[in-house]
Length: 174
Image (cartoon, rainbow, N blue to C red):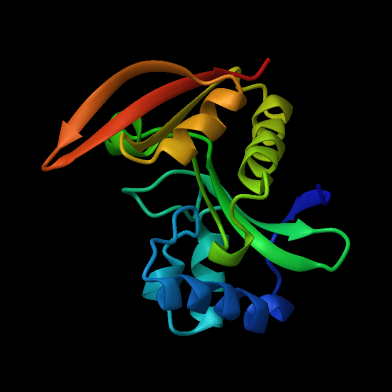
């Protein structure tokens, strides 16, 4: 399996990130872990927004401190995924969203990348001294549940919101 690493987006990543976004639009798929990239037609606007979330003093009042990372394949510098690490939980994140959101580019799925990127994301919590991380997935997303379990996730419960059932897993990262 190819080696992956996480890095912060830069202003120079605009074309690659917007191509990543387009791959999800073309697949009619959701862009989890992208800090709302689906809502932005302009990379620079999205980039400014993710920078706000990196500092306590600039995080919008209803949101939490977070970092958005590109998941990059080392051998060709291709963006194969994105991950959003949220270092606090508000009520919604505690019930349904969790600490980490992530996605893998549709053409790069079923290659083991999701497990590897989640492992890399968990390293950032270890470095911050956070010892337990909540991850969630839709009950019918078997692949995501397997990724979470592979990384040590223990199912705590399931929560229902409208017609959706969310499974809540805790991972010990210490």
